[in-house]
Length: 505
Image (cartoon, rainbow, N blue to C red):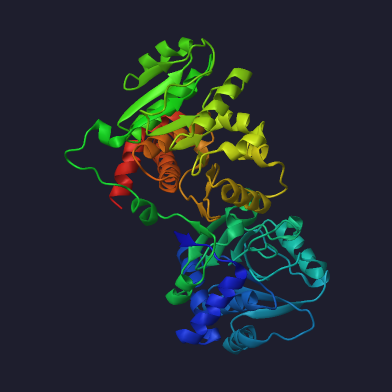
């Protein structure tokens, strides 16, 4: 799992690199700046004017170095330094002197709003005002400059992080005083705040550029946050023995569907089978049995006494994993049956959709959750579980606390689905696309988690694999159907390709 460090940790890793590579601070800044220059010269025409807005810290030092280097490639560069009445110090000061000695770039200073330059619509603004070490909201002339740049029609490229955005917790920040970038080029590691939905319009497209920070420091520093890579997830896949049989790969029980909601049971059942379980029994209301037997002939059918809803479940001894929730409704009889299921303590359990809504209505039942249960809520379902929250950072802390307190795995669905573990660690998923925001997509994920649990994967392994494969299958489906036309069944149809791609990594 790739680590996501705090801004303070990144500063310490920078310092460790300087001391132990060893490398001078100014040379590390040059190395970072060259990465952005290489990115820019491949994508930005040298007929386009580059306007560099420079702050007093290392972020400004990066901008000064980039301006000098881009000028060497015959780009038209202009630099505007935000002047707080104190001269630049350290590496930023050195880069200011180097730029002036080069003599190819005009340098102006801004102290008040009237000093702000005219911004042509075709220009590219390079934001080097404030970096990831910022810890208080922008105000005064800095906030005025940010507003001025945001209201221009020019595109903005942010160095490392958009000015004004905090690297982690923005719950006390004023997001109206933050640069709205079209591109963000960050150094070595993404910041935690990059994974939160309310910052999408601030970051634009973001990319991580390696700058050669010391691997020993990266290994040494601990963090509860990380994000998945293909290699990390592929390492969790189990191989299959030649003489294995269907009994080798488990028997899954899926409790799903109600009158008028049998589609959820069908979608989850197909996904469960496509994820590799040896046997699947789907428990459905009496009226749903013909639908399931016709739509999913590979699944066996357990039939509830009720024509309409889930009110009971078969004996659990024969099943290696249980999944419950898609389309079951929240009627009193279903609530009672869910409580009985929790009291029966299935060995491996995934809870989704209506089962989460029932659980949220009875918080006293949280203590009944078997250890390492997997819950797969969408944001509104999660809010029902834990109560309201004002921002994504606060939500993330509530998610971690929930996993730790009840010793469960929570996959909070969305772009960059966050998977929290019983030890409080969190892994963000990096596959998937907006086309997956469609009815039934979550039912498919439930089926995949269940199928993997049934095969003997741990709750953590099954969830990490499931969210990655679910997203990757969605990405493969989007190549054929685009975002608008993608439906949940397309995700299941591409699961086989996703498995193959992951195995070939």
